[in-house]
Image (cartoon, rainbow, N blue to C red; front, top):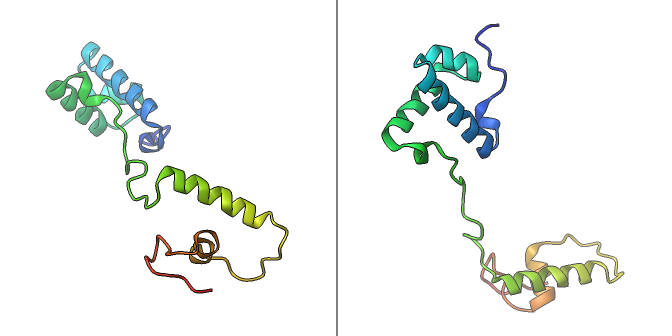
Amino acid sequence: MENELKYNLQKLNPQTQEEVRKKIVREMKKRGNAKEVAEICECTVRHVNKTWKKYCEGGIEAILAVKMGRPVGLCKRLALEQELATQKEIILWFSSGEKKTQNISLCSICHHIHQKTCPTTQRYVKM
């Protein structure tokens, strides 16, 4: 199939996507024909046109890779020190040699470690 792309640009990492966009801009400056550039860069004509339009409107900054997704730690309920202490306690609890036959949940671990409220349910946990 001649219209099939060699690779899916959406599945590439952001730096590679940025390099493809920069290549599209270089080739558009040389050739000016979106169809030729799409064949050279192994992408769609639509992608070439959208990238070229972004470049014309915003310059090189408009086609650079941007960090996507949720910021790290946005939904955390524990401070870094609490999280590290909890991880350490969990490791010690599991390596203590006791048989853990019951189902383990976050609430039961919180109860075992802190003997107080669970950060996920915000209520006291009974075992």
